[in-house]
Length: 606
Image (cartoon, one colour):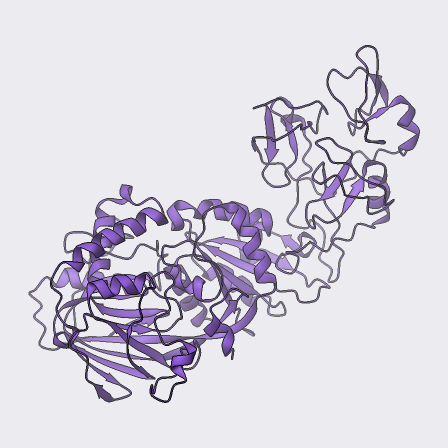
C-alpha cells in the first residue's frame, strides 16, 4: 500500500469512516485491489490482499449506463460518481465511472464450470463490492459491514444473504468457507458449479451434475420474444441474470424441442418448465411435451406475456407482465408451487360433404391450417390469424407454402382453455383482421383491450343470429335443446376465460339439488358448456357483472355447424365452413399452481 492524496470523498474500508483532509496524503491505497484506508487502519488489514484469486473463472462484465440514486462510489478509483457519469454491470450490478469501467477486470458472475464435474461439489459465494445494506454483518468475523454507497465490504450475488468484510474476504476464499445456498431461488437455478459447457450454443453438448440439494427442481424457461409488446427480449435477459443463461431458451431459435431434449438427457433431475408468452405459447409448449417421452413429465408454469392470459390466471401465475421487477416475485412464488394436472381436449373438424369449394376456399383453408400449424410447427406470436380472404396470417412469410386446398379430411385442434362459436368469435375475427392490417396501432396489452372493446361495442347495436339457427348440439350423445336467445356457445375448460372471468356455477349453486351440473374442475375429464344471450350479455360476462347461461357438462361434445361461421379456440379465431365438430378428452398435462390460483384449482387437486 502507498500513501495517496484523495481528491474526493473516500471511505476507509477497515473502519468504515470517512478519510478526512484537504492536503497531503490523507491515507493509503492498494494499487492491486484498490482498497483505501486511514494510515492508522493499515494494521487492521491482512498482509495478502488476495488480488487475482477472488474469482477463479474470468468472465467479462456487461456494463450499461445507469441512473444512480444517492452517493455512489466507483469500484475502480473509489471516487464519488457524479450525475450521469455511472455504469452498472447488468449481471453482477458492479458500478464504475464511465471513464473507469474499461479498467474493471473480468470478474463478473460465471454461469458454468471450467473444471471436471463432480456430484456434490460446493457452490462458493460470488462476492460483489458494495451490494448490500448497512445492517449487514460479516459472515466470518460477524463485525458490521457498511454498504452506504462505498466499499466497506462485499455481498454474495447468488444468495444475497451473506456479506463479507474486506479484511475477511481472502481468508474466507482460501478456507473455502463460502459454501452458497444460491438464495431464495436456489431450488430453481442451475448452479454454475454443476454446469460444464463443451459448446456454448449447442445444448446437446452441455453436461450437468447433480447437486446435494433438497427440493431441487430447476426451471427451463421458454420465451416467446414476440409476446407482450416485444417484452420477450427483456424477459430473456432478466431471466438469464436471475437464473442461469443455460436455462433460458428463445422459442425463435428452434422452438421448445432443444430445451425438452436437454431435460430428457438428465432424467435424475426433477425439472419444471416456465412458458413465457400468451396462451398460444403455452399451448405450443404443451403440445411439444405430448410428442416426447420423459421419466417424469415436467410440470408447466406460465409467465403471462399475452393479452388474456387465462391459463396463467387460473393457476395463479399472474394476469400480465409490465416490468422486469415482477420476474423475481413470480419466480419466488414458484419455489413453493404445487403440482396438479389439467384436462386438454381434441376438437376434430370435418367439413360437410356438401360444401362448395368455389366459395373462397383458400381463405378458409388458410385460416384453419394456420390454427393447426401455429400449435405444432412455428412459434405463435400470440396474435391469432386473420380470417380475411385478402390478409395472410400474421406469422406468414414470403416463402411460406401456398394454402392447401380445402378437403373433407378431418382437422384436429387442441383445446386448452375454451372454444366458442358466435358473436364473440366474430368480434375476435374483426379485431385480429384489423391488427394484421395496422400492427402499429397495437403496442401493448392496454391498447389491445381498448381496440377489442371498440369492436365489441359495435356488435352490441347490430342484430345477432341465434345459435340455434347456426348449429345443433349433443352432449355425451344426448341432443340438447338450445335456448333461442343464445348468440354465443362456449365450451369452458378452465376457471378463467375472457381475461379472468369465471364462467360457471359457484360452489353453493353447484351443490344445489335443483341444478344437475357439478362444480368446474380442471382435471375431472368434463368440459362445461355455457352461453351468452346477446352481445350486451357477452360484454357483461367479460366484465364479470353477470353469470352465463348454464347448459351442460360432458365428456364428449358433438356440434353440427349448419352454416359458415366465425369460431375460436383459445383466442385463435377463424371462419369455419359447415362442418361436423367433435370434442373429446385428449390427455391430462402436468402444471404448477401457486397460492394465488383460482379457488376451484386448489379445492380438488388430483
